Image (cartoon, rainbow, N blue to C red):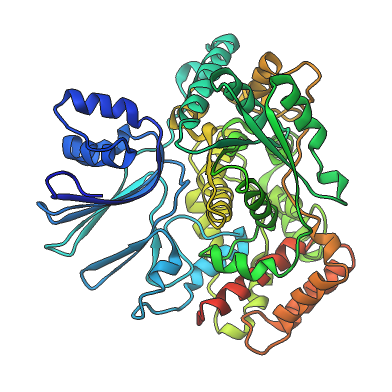
Length: 560
């Protein structure tokens, strides 16, 4: 879209939820509008406030705005990283796209692996920060903007927003639970109200968990007719949340639709590897895709519960971290580090609890154990044995990203917000939903809620060694039906380990990783992983990571 004068031009992906408020403010400043779109509001906001307009936008977005008078390009990305943006600076030019495959359409782009990015992927399951899997290509990090000057060929990158420090009253215990609960309820209700505004049908992805149930409760207050969707996976009862979702739907009188997902065929993997821009070691991309495909038959916009676990400490590993600190924090570091090294040396990869034992060597005052490590240093060296000298860069890269905080829970949740949420959860939801032309919005990632959670909510109201999501569950007790099970935590996953025991999944994984000489990973090491999986070790996600990487690399003809 161009502005009326033709001096500004924007390409924009996403939604600005407060565009009506901004439009009213800009109209008072003398701006005239030709449309009712949020895109035109961004143009006017830039014309009025320049790059400071970014701090006024409430939404999910990636955009590039060209200012022909200044001969400058502004590219920017939303605070949490819901929408992607890749760019390649080279020889005084800047190429950019929403998708890495867009940049790969340029025949001059060298399709070579960034070896540090691959080492990070093999360790964390994703590529963090501004790195990308391709040499010469970067991701614009969440909450960052870049200005490229066409006259000089120079660019300036900066962070326009960051998580607030926890306020002094929260640290010192001077905040009241009742006051925080009231504020949380008001913020969530307003966020849901804003995100329900659309020109097309809007639904809610109702899993029956705390987060999606609260979003349903808030939607029922503001929308005359709420449509909710629950997905069932036949044959796998442990993943079925139908009854919990029915309870919420009945209580709030929603128009409830139960969808039955088809069996997950292994031939989905090449499709997902092609779509995801970079490989990602999260097999829940499969049910996420299936859910998006089914929901898209009924609506084009859906609200989901992403962000609640990072903002309010909902993951089980937060309890374990706090327990580990309580039980072992007083033991001399030398003894704990010795135990950590012994676990790594004696226990095989995939042995349950191995990563936690390795985490005993962590300095609980400043560090975070790498409890979800896919491959440790020795295994990565062996996996990459055929690729020459392999530089182990991942641990160093991860350590640089650990937030500074004396509070272990603050460190852990902030780390997950900037890494796991941004590089795994939001990528998975964006790519899987966009492949089905479904727009998924996340009310819990309204930046006001993010600032509230990290700036005002003390750790004791997030998680303890025995509880999680304390404040969010207090809100659930206030607004959800009494019989709702607030303690249940059901991950969104598939029975990958069971599928790998026999049949098409086992055959496909073996053929992808061992069926050709044109593979990156050492065949002997891969065979050990497959053998360990057959013996009951927990290697399914590790194998999934290797398969996705190989499928992606072959699809786009990427060389080492």
